[in-house]
Image 1 (spheres, rainbow, N blue to C red):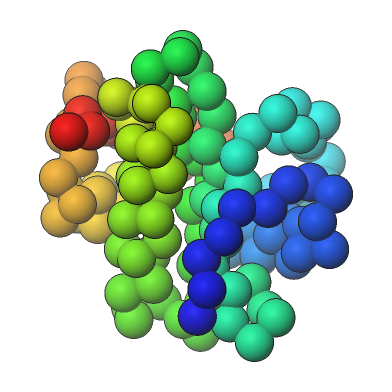
Image 2 (cartoon, rainbow, N blue to C red):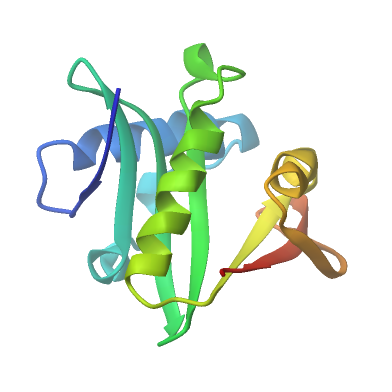
Length: 143
């Protein structure tokens, strides 16, 4: 398995979109391809790749020079529960540290809260709804 940064021109980017659609949008009856994805060209896309197949991904969007927002984390259904998400998060956190970010913020689905708590993310504020699903704001200060 390999972790790497890709951009929207990568031959792997369509696999990222497909993975996000399958894991994050289709179960909610939504279609990622109905959304305006143009802003993603200015975001970082980090992936886990195995045998030329994208098995996990996440997006990072700069909020301020020291703050970045993690979004659209997805792990292929057949690969969930194997620690790949945690490994990708570690890769993302190292990437953020190396690029001078001091804080990662995210909106976690209620069902994913424990995953992020195990990675030392803190709950901030109250539950809110996003894409029809309960979410919480979370953040982590990077050392």
